[in-house]
Every structure is written in structure tokens, then in C-alpha cells.
Length: 406
Image (cartoon, rainbow, N blue to C red; front, top):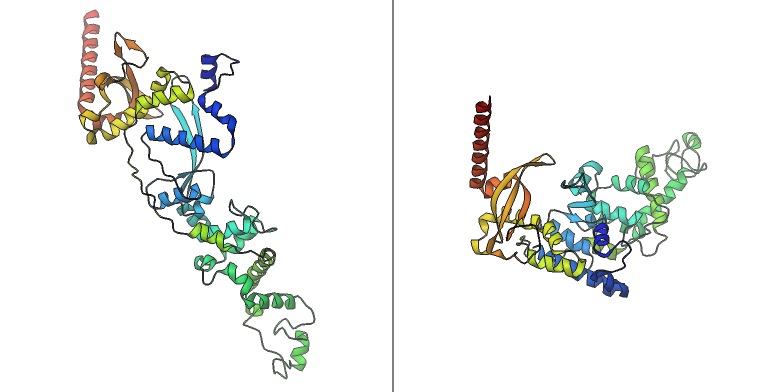
């Protein structure tokens, strides 16, 4: 785009586009203006737009849950907290040589794989975000790292994490059980208390003299209800949880019910028709000339493949009077990124593109794209047959010519 602008306006030209001019105001007003321009462009491309309430990620996730969209394009992992099933991140586009098709790469994250590989459900991800931070609560719990939080959350059942009536995080502040565990943990580290029953006196003393609190004249009773009745591994997990709890309760608002409600609230499904409508090529040309300072010829070159692809995918459902293009003939075979394709010349149905400046043969507008053979076979089987028949005829004519020459 930068190279094209230099060609149009000169290397050091400061001539701005319409978007650049409007950006001088800055602020929220400019952002809303850009959103309107994006909405207009998407509408021209035939794509439906949804104006969501609150966080955009919440609306995108709701559409994903309802399977209205394949996934959410965002750099924000909070989408999974709202219930998204698939998130696309890190789009990159590259070209390989002049005239070659664009290549792209994207990172795909699926909730199903997160659950299978990491044993992290949506509720556990929300709990993890409360401890480690997210957009809603950037800091999280001071002093609690990702690895520590993961060890704790992995040890819990999904229903225990954020259940409104028995949330483990909510119980930290109100349940005396945790205060008792803290006392027991401290007692186990004291040398003046019995490691078996937890009462005053060492174990060796109790073995000889008994324990008054246990009611034993010889020996003492093992405390199976508390920490002493746990395995070493369970004690480590309790110690880990108590350490996180101590740091978390330094924040008087922890755990945030507002944060739980934000991510778990069921949102209404936006009323929108997600059908891909026919792209409006003339509107796009006017839009790109007005806002991007593109030439009509360049805009047509960029948009035509979108229109022809829509046409091939919707030929059976599109009445003749609504068609903007029609495949005229096949020029040659092509291969793009390992996919069998055909170079196609298209007919401008009704001559509505006659005003667009482009490559011409006489008075005819030449429209050429490269399309997957599979789509053309479905939409234009006769055109494929004519192309193959013509190709075979040329091949036979060449063989006859070579035989006569020899």
C-alpha cells in the first residue's frame, strides 16, 4: 500500500487519504468513525455486522457458542472466559514471487484441546485469571505466579471452582475450616507438639506417659480428621492452597463476584442473519477511491476474486437477474499452493462495469481470475467439458502436424 501511494502521490508526498484526514481529531470519536467505516466495508463485502453490548469478546463468544461463526479473531485470550470454543490469533500474510497467490498463517486455539491437554475447563480458566490477572483484573493476586496457580487449580474438581453456593475461592474468606488448617499446619512445624495427635508433648513422651487430651494413659490417638490424617501429597496441596489464600485475602474485594458474573452471565443472542450476501463491487470501487485513494482499476483487481468466489459458491441459489458475472471461458490450467485451479475469463453481465477503467480488448472489459477447479466443476460443468474437448482437439492437431513434418 505504501508503494502504491508513493506511485500515486510521489515519494515524499504528504497527501493524506480521507481516513488520515479524519484522524487528526483523535479520541473516541475518531475510533467510532473508523468502526463505521469498517462496518460499511464489511457490508459492501456481504458480511453481516453485529453491534454487541459491553465487551466485544463477549459478543463474539456468544456467536461462537451458538455456532453462528467458526471462531473469534482476537489477540485477547479472555474470549475463552466468555465461552468461546475457537480463537484465531497472530494472522500473517506473505507473497511468494510476482503474481503468486497470497499465503497466510494463523494460530488456532480450541477449547476442546485446552480441556484435553491441560485439564482446564472454562470455570478453571476464570479462576486462573482471578489469581494471575486478565483484562478485567490486570494484577490478579500479588505474589501468585502462573505455575503456582496452575498446580492449585489442577487439584480441584470443576464444580468446586466457581459454583455459586460452594466456591472454593469464596469459602477462603468465610469458612473456619481454612483457619483450622492454618493452625494445624503451624502446629505440625512446632517441636513441642505431638506429630501424631497434635496435642502438647512430643510423640515419645505420649508413648510412655500417654496423652491427657486424648484420654489415653499410654500412647495417643492419631488425628485422622485433620492434616495428620492426610498423605504427604495432600498436605503439600493444602499448604499450597493456604499460601495462595493468605496472599489473596490481602485484597478485601477478593474474590470478585462482579468478575465472575461478567464472564459467566448468559447473554442474549444477537438477532442477525449470518448469510453471506452477494458482494457489491461497484460500491467497493467507490468506497476505495473515496477513502483509500485507490484507482478504479486497482480496486476492481482486488475485489473481483471475492465476487467470483461468492458467485461459484452460490450459483445454484442465485437467480439470473441477480448475477453480476458469469464464467465465459477457461484459459488454462493453474496450480496455486498445491490446489488444482483454472484461469477463467468472466463475462460482465449487463455491462454494468463498462465505466470502470481496466485492461480492454476493443470495447470489452476483460475480467480474469484463478479459481479452484472443484468449484468450477460444480458450477460450470459444461465449461469444463468444452475446455477439455478443445484441449484434446489441439493436442490431436499437434500430433498430425508432427507426423506430416516427419
